[in-house]
View 1 (cartoon, one colour):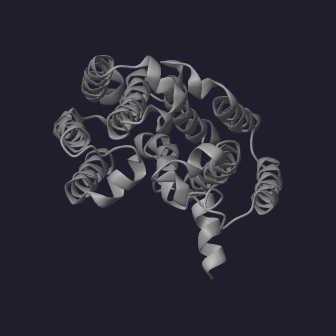
View 2 (tube, rainbow, N blue to C red):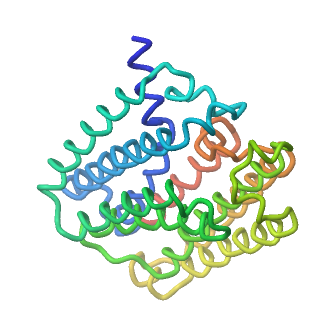
Length: 290
């Protein structure tokens, strides 16, 4: 049983919450209660979850020596020796085979998006994560691919403002993640190499830009002609309050409590954030579907 738990930690099931972004097109295209579209989006979620698990395994194999010297990452299954590299490669191969089987019944656009996701993340693992600015851009690109995958699998188009909001949300979380890492570990040997090229002043500016970008782009989406045409209401503008609170709360946790190195852990452990997310989702569902 303990071995199985370690395998789940290896593929970071807790981080699969990030793949919920594939449901954004489903919700905002008014297709949530269409059984066929829901099943396709669920398949996309499962596929991206497997793909991210594969990426995490490859990343942990490449970073095993660095992880062993890290105060937190040394407890990862490969770094602490609870799962061997050989076992990890076997699991990665099994996941890859399963992905190929699933993609054999998917449309070509979704296949290309998922292949791009895996390729970009592989390049990130071996090189791109050491390139200043580009490292956070790659993380944001991964979230954008999730949304794009969720859209093409059910064959819908998204508002440009909603796509921009997704980009800014992912950039915001990536910048916060790097900012917390920068401040948490005083010993530069424990930090990512790329953090040497950053400064707290730069992080503060990037945080302000991305936080403002989320609020502005989502606000413009909520009052756009596309939104009015699709939902026949301007009431979506009231959900901006939840977005603003979510951004401000995230900033508070990151700056005041120095949390955010693991976005999934932060979102799943902070009660006000969870309640805000639930209320936001309920309001969106009532406005769009009510």
